Every structure is written in structure tokens, then in C-alpha cells.
Length: 424
Image 1 (cartoon, rainbow, N blue to C red):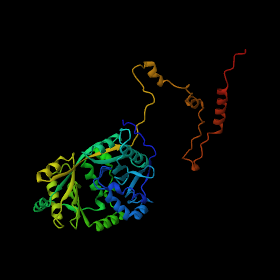
Image 2: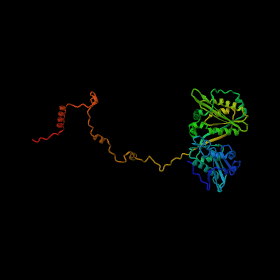
Image 3: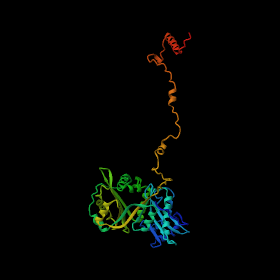
């Protein structure tokens, strides 16, 4: 149970606007006056893209579309001065899980020597996102293990450890050596929207149940819409990158057992970035898929290949250490649920209860109502009709002879009279 966060006075949190660009430009500068927590990408680089495409981003945020939450940010303002900014984004297509991309807060020293006000402002930014974004049931954050202030901030606001992530770098010389080996991948196929079901099954099987529940990915997350394809094409063209993705198909089980996506830089200014997913029962695919990615990277300028591994993937980390890849970053992935637990008004103790008090709930609360079975039994049966004689034409009911009718009527009248008392 987290403790209550003290609220800084005169703090206003609102959505990000274009006029805030100049005010928070100094947040991108490296110094003791700014605390950056979250993604390794600097805030200044993000703001440069936002300044260039702010009108288009604002237009997409007005109606539901795949690019609606491309840049969602909130600022903390105090006395017409920006004190902090937080950037969030949906983690899956259903927007049930959101991720805190970055938190940048101006370091303010308190006058009385207590807790820094920057931590209080960061907590208010997080709390505001928890309440304002009602779609999010789970929140994710990834922070460096050595960033003690960021870990304290997120743990104070209810985040708990989910997995440990390690980022690796494969040097160009090592990539060239891996490319000399011919990979054994006879069923390597390109990825399309028709393969979304297979990729979803592979993603589900490659992670533990707790991580799978937090990620909450569906088949829709592995499909690309028309607007998303146009946006990705424009982004790759402007950033001089090319994306290649393939998966390994198992024909006997009709399932995908391996998948990779590599983002290649055509001008050699940035390292190549790869994503790798392998089924836990087919760990022998690691050298094959890395050899295939190395052969693809040889067609582009020589650059380092970066990829990540989690602590629940020990076979991948062992193979990367075996080939000589170097660790570049070690982060901690944390999650927080926004479902609030209902507090009990009065604790109930079962020790002092007697048997009569326990069985009191089984006693009827009102008098029993008489049933309708007795009324049904009291209704006399209907008189039987004459049976139809099917042997006669027309199916008319058979009538006995006249003399027999008179005799029967006399017998019936005599039988219907009650027994008369003996008057003689």
C-alpha cells in the first residue's frame, strides 16, 4: 500500500501545447537542474520532431485513428512557469496498457530541507495520467537500474518489478563473421497481415503468464492498417531507414516458431535495431536467425546491431555472451495496475460467532405463502365427450337406441337420488 503523496501548492497539470516548446527547451540540456527519467532518447530530439509536425499531430489527435496518440504529453505549470513534462503512449492497440515514455522535471530544492519538490511534481504528473486516461488498466515503465531517484519515484507511486531487460550490441566485425555461415531456414516467409494469428500465438508462448497479462496483446496488434503503413513509409523515407521482417513457419504443427524484424540505416548514421522472438521449445533458432540478420545487414553500411533480451530468456543471453556481444544497457521494467481495491468498512471476525448466529441467515425472513397445488386439485375434471365412430361416414358420434337411452336415463336418475330415510 503506497503512502499518500503530498500535493504541491499552485500546481496546474494540463495537456501539452505548442507554446510550451520554448519553455521546456532547457529540459533537453544535460545538467544538474533537470532530471530526465524514462526512455534513453533525449527530450530535445522528440521536441524537434514535434515542432516540425505539430499541426499534423494535432489534426490526428482530434478523431479516433491509429495515429491519435502519437505524441501525448502533459505539463505541470506553476506561476506561469513549466516545472515538468510527462510523455505517455498506448502500448497495445486496444489501449488497455499504456507506457510512460519519459518524465522530465526541473530539480527544485525545498526550503526546509525535506523531500525535493521535483519528486512531488513527478508524482503529481503520474497521478494525473492515472486518472485522466481512463482506458488504461495497466501502466508500464522502463528505467535504468542505476537511476535511484527514478526507481524511488515509481515505487512510491505503486510500480513493481516485472522483468529485467538487457540491451546488447553486436559489432560490425562480429556481424561479418556471422554472415559467413549459411543459415538453415527452409521455411522463412515474409510477414503480412494474414500471418497475424501465427505471430500472436508465438508472442503468447514466448513470455511468462504475468508479462503476457500486462502486455495484453491481441491479434490486432500484429496487423498494420493502411494509415499506419503510410505513416511508417514516410517515417522510413525521412529517416533513411528500411524495415525487413520475416518469420519461420513449422509445417507439421502449422505454427510460427521464430520471428525477427530489423530496422536498417541506409546512410550509416545510426546503428541497426533488431527485434527477435523465438519459441522456448526451438532455441536452436538463435544462431540461424542471427546469421540471417547478419547477411541482410551486409547489404547496408557497416554499423552496430542492437537487440534486447529479458531475464526470462536465458538461452538468448547465453548465446549472445558466447558469440561475444557486449552489454550496453541494463534496465528494469516495472508495471502498475489502476484497479482500486475496495476497503472493508468493518472487519468481520469469525471466532466469536455462535452456531445460532451462523444459522440465522438460513431462516426464512417472511411467512410462507400457500402454493397453488391445492387449488389445482380442487378443480373437478371436465366431462368426457362421446367418442367418434370412425367406421361411420362423417365421423359422427354413435348414439345408442332410444329404448336403451330411456332405460339408461332412468337408471341414472335413480342412482343419482340420495338414500331416503325410512319414514314408515
